[in-house]
Image (tube, rainbow, N blue to C red; front, top):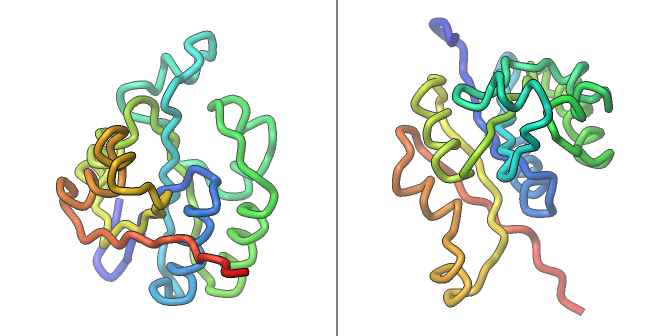
Length: 166
């Protein structure tokens, strides 16, 4: 996939505040002209009535260009619900930074599927947002970002969402 001189930057997205913060951080600090930004979205509980889920469960979807991923019918086909704010950010970043944005939808446990994608697709690095779980919740629920940091085959940056102080 990546040829000499091409840089693939992975971004784990779940369309939350944390993943938007990770996207903003990547745009401000990491992405440069000519890069390819690979959005990795994991559908944790896939709808097995969707043909695409059954077809792509093991390997994930093919790479989906941002222009197609922005179409509601394509997103729905893969069981994804991207929000308008994230799509607007992605389109702006693609245009201003002159980067290619593609998406890959994965199905299953986010921890395992993100690490598998990192192994299967030669990425320079991965940026992932943090939900900001406390220590107890992180121990009980498990942290996707903690797991990926400790098991990924490429450098991983975890971005916490900005906190607002009243």
